[in-house]
Image 1 (cartoon, one colour):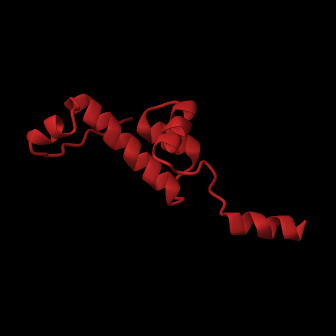
Image 2 (cartoon, helix red, strand yellow):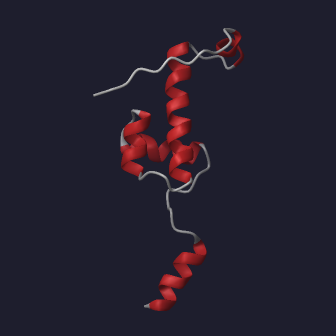
Image 3 (cartoon, one colour):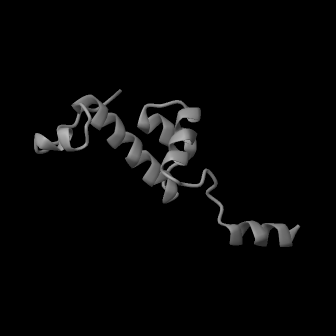
Length: 84
């Protein structure tokens, strides 16, 4: 099941960003999914589903947005290594 949302935007936003409305919507979905992943709200697979891309495509987007694919901080990794 899917839900359709209507978002009103100024017409010139598409020309400023040099994107068609369809491209803008795809980029908006991707940016939202990347941010929710970065905040730890969703998993990689759920974020990819939300963005409408493959998991590989989502990993590429993380790189493009300069977001780590790992949800564990360096400090958490150090602590886990110390506990072993």
